[in-house]
Length: 310
Image 1: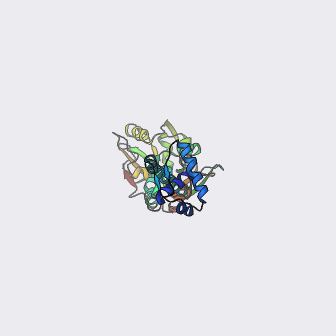
Image 2: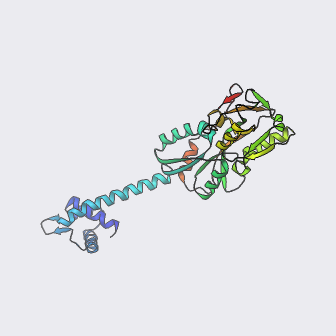
Image 3: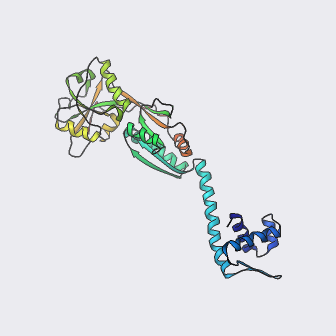
């Protein structure tokens, strides 16, 4: 069964006249008749009863017309979806993000995307930088919103938020909890909880870079790759953890049953930039559509009153 044979049959069913149907299809009558014969042969049933005076559908033909129209409509819909997907107006898009992206990038970008491309199905996945980039490389994500940009030709990137401050996170009973801010050099005397570098290289490097600038060494006594685990640790032990200001000020570091506060660090203030990252050989047109919906954000998130309770 060929698609053109279905089109020919439906045209015959509409006109019930071979001459008019052939003219509409820009075919000769013998060619149109051949299409019908091949279709009937493939089905093993007679669809059209034709005499010298009239053309009408058989009972099988009337039932087959209904199904044939559904097939034609589905093919038309498939063609529309294919064109829309190729133009980035339809399809699916998997986006990874972190807390600053959730607060400063996604709300406006998703609103624009929904308005401009309502047929694109967007799925969101909150993850740290390392896991996001792993999933981007494996095809699990189409766009990663991460700290820092990867230094590999496999990815392309665009900065979307600059100078996101990092803060210290301590328990409410810690001596720093009531202070508006702490010079970075004072970390030399504090036991710290840190995450593995592969979880978020840019944040890790910013913290240790600030330590180097302050001419101190950090005393890392525990590791915690999950922000919630960090919150638990600092709430029960006299430790100092680290978080981005957007995560701390939104309560994103708060874990069940914990009580923590974020304290400003200065001299220097460790900061990181947020980037949109995608594959260099990207084949999903919706990626470009979403990137067009992202603001070039130069805004720097700021600490209010030097202290944020979370």
